[in-house]
Image (cartoon, rainbow, N blue to C red; front, side, top):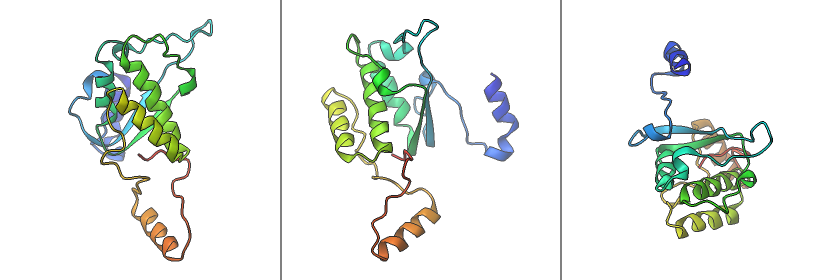
Length: 169
């Protein structure tokens, strides 16, 4: 695999803890940070084919759960599609429904829309999914400098909104 070969060559720069996995290979593989990449889009005719591989099958939501709950600190979502592009009204199984809800949740996190975050989390749980808010720190600060600056500004009486535009849940 070309990507894995390139990573192997750059280990001294990026560290030896970087791992590239597909949906089927992440079971039990926990990391500090997970970059969750979703690369789908319309075909040559402009039609969006909703073929999400294993997510479309029965139990697909469990695979998604495994992928997004392997991060100890945060999940970074990189996607070529917007949640609004997913038409899941005819979906037979929960995997693609949960994918759309998760993308909406990630978008709400980026926008710091607490009401929407709570609504989406409740909808996922109601469908039998995982509770994304459980044991997660709200708007976590991952860098010591961020924490120090945040603490000082709060001490001075400022209301601080850190990592604006960053998904850090």
